[in-house]
Image (cartoon, rainbow, N blue to C red; front, side, top):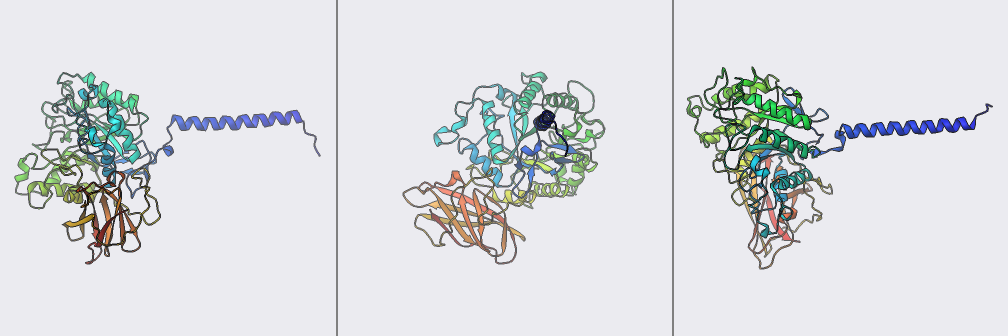
Length: 532
């Protein structure tokens, strides 16, 4: 048996404790300094695993902090770049409802336009506080409104891409300066936002300037017009204060040495990237972003070509997609949209072809627009700011991940749409107070879309309601304005979101879904709504 010096033993124990404490402190500091992605979870979609922020790029792909490929599938919600200095539609609905609906439809990112002058203003308009919504926005500046939209988007599981859409509130300038504002004003606004949202991790990046056109050039080294050089100056200034952001660079319209195509949309000409790439201090943060529209916006000559629509594929490859094909950088189509989605009109054919192209080439996109008040394109919402344009959403659903219907007793993602009310299967009989109108308003070979309109025919308001139906040979892949849950093999129960639970007398609530056909007996049956 050996003799042990007790004083020496105490000293060794103390040294061991100090070593453990020191190692723990080092691990803690490393997590803080590197902003460990494990602490940040945003669902990219209902069907996807969580995105670990921040985002970066590898070749043609956008990846998260764990290296998982991320496809951005989003909408443009405009308004902050106009004289209201707030997202449009808030005269009809609460901003939280709007964000929840965007998420429910399967989108994971919002391109949020702003104007430099708007963010410097103190005034906000276009919000109707009398409807009992948007109370948090009352008395706020435009920048504070942006803060609240960004924060609520994070709670809903949505990413935000900021877009410097205008300098003033009235028009889209050709260049990144003008309209009484300088390049320094533009870059200063960007660095201010980059610092402000440095710890707001769902803000993923900066779309530096919307649609350079006219005098804007690429690759000619003219300091006053070369957009490529200006994008480098702004992008590197942003990365100097916030290295986590993606830097999104649009194209120009013309003035590119050696360009092959005679016509491009504003911001759509990225032919110069091959010879004159944007050089950032962090090259793995660069994303290129063309804009693309159809004949409903402007009837370009190539829409009347004898080989239309086959000529579109080569145009898109020459104009922008060679960047992804040659593994130079990712492509995010920052804007595309239109009113026509049929297979007869030029615009409808173009829009269907582009959706197929995006799907085939695994490109990211943000659709123009969420708003119905875009005069030349319309939006995903109809003019009531509530109802979804079902044919348009059905077209876009080809690019969206399937929306998972939660099985019984499995809670929904709390960031998406908390609904504490337990599901009760209503008896499928008619009720005197609630009337259900069903319309299969899109029906094609492999799928269909259904809308339900629930009308309160009574003299008193309904404080909560549910809808039930049976459906045999179909699988829901997308729904809106409510939670759809499957109970058993063919029974479905629908519960409203928090904002839609109350139905005033004569008020109508709209919900619905799109589904894949699994056989000929696919139509919903035994449909009934009850107040609970």
